[in-house]
View 1 (tube, rainbow, N blue to C red):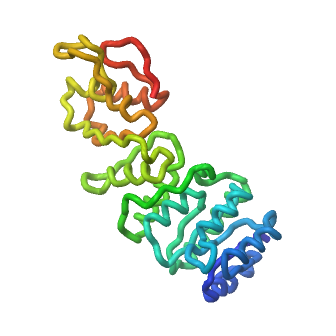
View 2: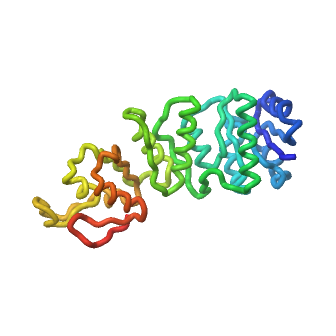
View 3: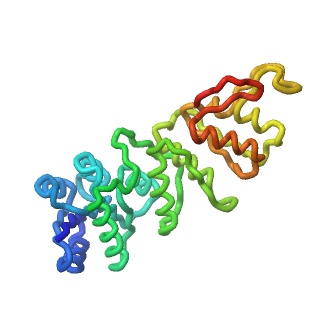
Length: 275
């Protein structure tokens, strides 16, 4: 029988888990973070999923999450809260939470999350990107909303922020793509370095390559000196390419190469630059 550890300072929540699932799972409960860590110390190898409230007396849910992940990085930990905010959702996912649930939740939803988490635990698969060395970023961009869709966005931001992979942000005009890009930046280890937003649709086709990659003196008419491109300017930081699909296909091909291996040449040069 699989074991669930339910950590919540509300007795009613602990009782609900027990009454709903005691026939299917072994249920362990704790009323605060300290008690949870004591149980975890004794039962670590037996616990398959942890359900963890965010706001509790003493240690917060995020603090407990970090300690649990420090010992068992692949253990699914589901964060629960009645006070949803974007910062907490991003922080939780950044620290490796398996999911983020907003109270009240329904039996079917809980059952679905439990089954997925147990499957993940059984496979010993790290379901979300996690890096305990990444420091916590201070609050910065504010994403407003408590709907499931917004929470999902915040979870993805938390995952993307701890990685160094290129991120594709899609959505209609006005939905907040740059806000998401800045949130990823602010929660990443690159915060404090250069952040550049480039509107690709506003750049004429004839200059977009020199704008992004730079150019050498004499590369074209009017190029009287070397120009450092945007990718070089924000080396080690973040570049946000807005409306990337509006670039010409040759320019998109060059951008693809940068995304693949971080290399490019300035216009008029054969020397490869890494960024």
